[in-house]
Image (cartoon, rainbow, N blue to C red; front, side):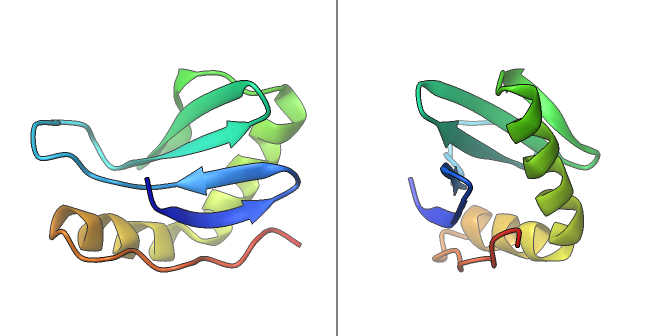
Length: 88
């Protein structure tokens, strides 16, 4: 699964599967925790993260919502996704 960002110990990835009918989303791994976040609206859609990490991911996604949408469009077209700057 292509990595698009990494910060605060979290790895953020995005991909699209042909068989999937998922709405636009991305995946976050933090230690043993994993979660999926929707793009519109930005928010947790599956699994969970500790509350601090969830807030950081949501803040990052709000700041980079246009880039996330562009990456989703690329993934759906089977094009490589691009890196997005981490939250600083």
